[in-house]
Structure formats: structure tokens, C-alpha cells
Length: 549
Image (cartoon, rainbow, N blue to C red; front, side):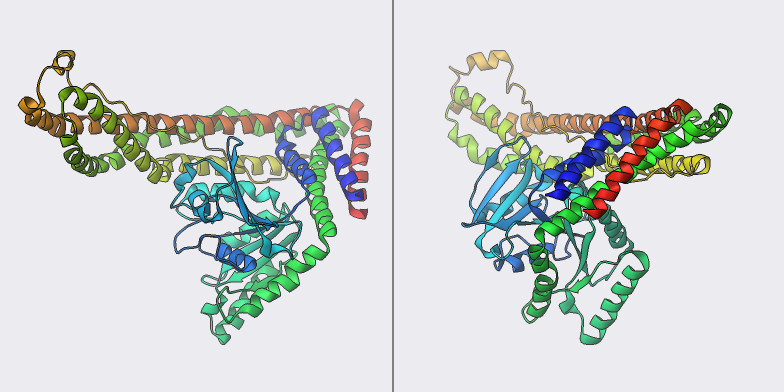
């Protein structure tokens, strides 16, 4: 209870200071801490590259093969698993709706094969199992695999990471450890002090190799991380039950026994990070306030020298998005053109089967239009879902370039503030949100001109049936396929361009936010020194209280 009170007061203090000193750049971290303070459940997340064995580990934990596994990227949606008196599943959608389908329908909502690109707009799925009674108040989280071909899966997993309390990083033995794994561990230590490595697929190694791999991983982690996380060799296969038992007895069960203590530790860690970031900003403001007018002018010119090149830097960001947009139409059209012949062949087969059912011209015209619109819409929607990551590749590439450019800019600012005032700006991760494209808009034109439709009531089908069929199969249907594929290419091009414009706006907003924050901090004068010192004392007191709590 004491730590919650201290956390609440610390967050309130930072909210007040960030508003008074206009520290806009701290707001995302502030929001994450507020959410962590409200949360009562202890979240144990299994995170790692795709095919690392995350879902298999959780299935073994539940004692039932409930979560889908496979040799290709499977999980596409955040899946929570917790104890419940009766087995059930709750699916929450992005619009706030919930539903409770049977557990057997879980793959339909959380797998890449049955919910590609998350077209069903699922926010999360929560599974309750009576087999987890030994873990009350713990919520296990299965996250989408990182670094697969599906970029949206990586985005989903990374966006969820600030919510983690205990992070269990699944690392396969082949390769045993990569720089991506180490970078992931460093990122997670920003959000929680409780991190462990699950060295999966240990059954693939013989006794000699297993000892070498385990020693290699532990040595590398000791060299690159402080503190180094514990490493648990693991396999879900029969004959390796002792490895699973070790994870439970040495990591999970102790967390249950010390649940309130563990939760308090994680809360303290997140809040201390928040207090430290706020303190850095105020120390920068104090340095500016304590400098003489002439000193401040020179020092601020050193820090804000980047401001002189801000317009040029924004132009560079704009060129990144323009370059990505330039080849998007050709890139999208090439994919869709390859789909034209298969669609025409499939529709021709359907038309051949349906045409004899339309006994009159008057029945045929609306039936044909309804069938073709529905079938074409369905096929183009499937093509859009299957190729979404391909169509959005220019956006993904632009996003990565923008993030790198922004991080470089932020690093230069940090070096300048350190040279001028001895204070470095913290360079926490930068995220860019990609706008999702809309659903394809299919449009089918009239089968015939108006005169034919007026005459359709009196013209017998037996007289014109063959002529009409050839018109539909050889002219009308291929034209509608070509026209709607072209429309779809245009819609995707517009969606890509909207997403790129949005990314550019986010990047410019981030730049303006940083420079506005710096301007405000560096404009403090000597008359404000005492107030800044008083506020720094409050932050120091809050940090001391967090440590003692």
C-alpha cells in the first residue's frame, strides 16, 4: 500500500512539473506509468522471435495444447492466459466490443492464417483455464513473434512491451543468442527489473553441446548486461520435464509467493525511470538559469545549433517519404496485375456453373451484378489481406528511416546538452504509428445499356442466351476485373500516401516537441533558480522515498 501511495504521489509530481515546465517529451512515459499504477494483475509476458517456442511453453504450463503452434509465424494477436474456475475465452475488439466464442475457436482470432493482418480487428484474446490455479493473480501473455516477415506482428509485440511486469525472453538454441536478443533485453530492462531468458529447444543439443551453449549464453549476458538475467534451459518435449519444473520452481512460484513485493518492485522501477527523466530536464533548466546572460546565450546557441538546420532536416524527412511514395503505384500494380488471370479463370468457372440457373434476361441482369460484385469483393479483399505487408513495404521502410533519422537527431541534441550543461537527454525508443488502409471499394457497372434492360422483360433467354453468355464471359467480366484491380491499386496507393503523410507529420511533431521543450527549459533565468532547485529537491525526495519503500 505504501509503494502505491508513493507511486501515485510521484506520478502526480511529474504531471505537475511536466505541465509547469512544458516537458512535452515525457508524456508517453508518464502515460505508461499511470497505467501500471492502476493495474492489479501481475503480467508475465513471453516475448521473443517467431518460432522460438513461446506458445509451446505456455501450453505446457496449462497442461493442454490450447495455443496454436506451427513452423511458420502463428500468433498475430496479444493472447492473455489466466486462472479461471471454468474454461472460457473472451475476445476484445479494437472498437471495444467483446464476445465469448468457444475455446476451440481461438485460432480463428489469434493466428496469422485465420486472421491475416488482423483483418478481424481483434485487440486481444483472454483465455481462462482451471489448470492455472497454482498461479493466482498472474496473467501470462503470449505475444506475436518478433522479426518475422509479418512486420505488423513485431509492431504489436513491441507496442505492448511497456506493460510487462516479468519478461520471459524465449531464445532458441539455433542461433543461441543474437544482437537482436541482447537489444531486446536492454529494451525490456527499461520497463521492468524482472527479466529472464528461456533457452528453448534444448532437446536439439547433446550433452556436450548443451553445456557449451549454456555457458556461451550466460557469459555473453554477463558481459553485455548489468544485471545479467537468469537463464533457464527449456524443452517442451517428453523427457525434459525437469527443465519445465525448474522454470516453475525457481522463477514463477517464487513470483507468486512474493506477488505484492514483486509488483511493488516493478512499479518502483517504472516510476524511478520517470522521475529520472524529469530530473534530467530540470537539471538542464537549472543550468540555463544559473548561467549569466552572456554565458547562457553562447551555451544555448551550442545546444540549439541544431535548430538552425531544423528546416533542412525536415526537408530530408520529407524527401524520405516522397521517395517511398514515388514507386508505390508501380510496386502495387505489379502485384495486382499478376492476380488478374487467376481471378478471371476462377470467375469464369463460377459463371459457367451459375449461368444455367438464370432462366430469363430480367432475372439474369440483377443476379449477375449481385454475384459478380460479391465474388469480386471477396477475392480482392483476400488479395488485400494476403499482400498487405507487401503493399505497405514502402511505409515500413520509410518508418524505419524516419526513426533512425530522428534518433540520430536526438543523439546530437543529447551530446550538445552534455557539452553545454553536463546533462544528457535520455534517448528512449521512438515509435511511429502506421495508418491502416481502408477496405477495397468494389464497383460493378451496368451489364447492358438502358435499352437492353428495358427490353429484357420481353426478350426470351432461349433466343439470346449464347450471345449474352459470350458477352459476359469474354467482355464484361474481364473488363470488371481489370477495372476493379485498377481501382484497388489506386486505393492502395492513396492509403500508402496517407500513411506516409501521417508518418511525416508524426516525425515533424516529434521534432517540434523536442525543440519546444528545449526552448522552454533553456529560457529559464536566474530569478527562477530557487524554484527549480526546490522542484529538484522534491524529485530527489520522491526518489529517496521510492528507494526506501
